[in-house]
Amino acid sequence: EAGVTQSPTHLIKTRGQQATLRCSPISGHTSVYWYQQALGLGLQFLLWYDEGEERNRGNFPPRFSGRQFPNYSSELNVNALELEDSALYLCASSLEPDNQPQHFGDGTRLSIL
Amino acid sequence: SQELEQSPQSLIVQEGKNLTINCTSSKTLYGLYWYKQKYGEGLIFLMMLQKGGEEKSHEKITAKLDEKKQQSSLHITASQPSHAGIYLCGADGDSNYQLIWGAGTKLIIKP
Image (tube, rainbow over the protein chains, first blue to last red):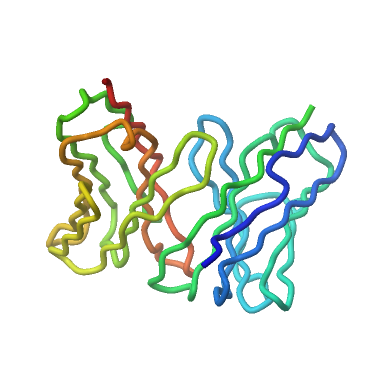
């Protein structure tokens, strides 16, 4: 069974640009979660999608957005990039949103120059 | 709001020694998850605990949830270099299926 896959592995952008990160969940998983892990900081919850709908959002500005497609894959968009957006962005999926472990991809390292 | 506190923040252990990492919640835990992360990589799911007093093992790693369901411990027996990494605990939060995360424990194994 293939795990959660994320692309690209690394992404280098400059301030003000826009970035798109992609995630394919484990087959059969309908919930997809996005997290930001900045250097020295813990996991910060960004977004949760389930059955194509945004179900919950963390404490991030609106320039962080995303969507979930009919095949349950997801993309995270970050507009007007700022230096502090440099971080490892992790995607996770779960079979159901309740009482099920989340399984993580290897992340996308976003660097803002 | 619920908070998870992990201790210690970091740990250096001689190879072959045992060690314990703790995760304490400010509220009752209804689902507790342990993960391991290698630097710069994704999280690897280790174990999930739900019932008070529950104990699970995977190879040389054992996790327990106390009877009051407010603390979990992760115990590694006869540590090996492959155990090095960051261990995180996560818990089902009290709102909208969002997991609450501890800050992580960095484990270094000395050969």
